[in-house]
Length: 110
Length: 119
Figure 1 (cartoon, each protein chain N blue to C red):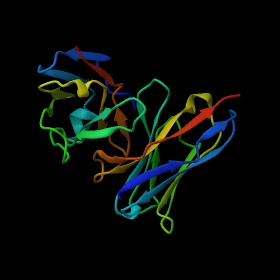
Figure 2 (spheres, each protein chain N blue to C red):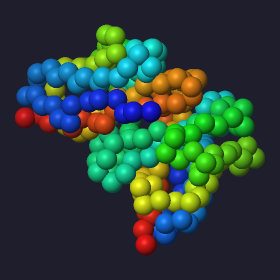
Figure 3 (cartoon, one colour):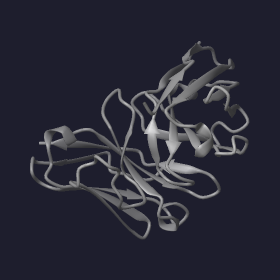
């Protein structure tokens, strides 16, 4: 049950795109299409923004997109806005009724 | 209104016990799996435990196995996390979360309840 690996920080200017990676193993990200991403503002609960690798819940802007290649998943935020500045976590089913999160990435809008 | 509301957090000494509750409104807990997730101060999210929709089958992270017990009361539509033999490293905000479908993402979260283990 080792955590997924995310970069501690990422940044971009308003209007630009930024991609956050999330690396796991064949036992989690590489083995299942149950990769999700959460946005968490300080002091608040996480909010689901991507599920099943590429799908967006209703109400999540299409500026947020997800993908996966092998054991690495990615979250891309296009057309960066000031309100996107916060923490992002990846998440995957890891088999045998266990789940694992990434360590989190703090996104800064320059 | 569909929501989850946690309660029961507080300060406890190492070795002590605490029971957290998570009350659901707007949906039945028996239709999907439910989870506890925790977040230590300034740290990332850590999955803690799951209870299946049948309300009986549970699984735990290695870090809490044998010390925490996850249960459900269908008459109250409420989840419980009994935490025994608490350690300093169990200090965290504890969230309950709803699973979209088996093994999938968590689409509804409570606001969390803080547990502090300290002497």
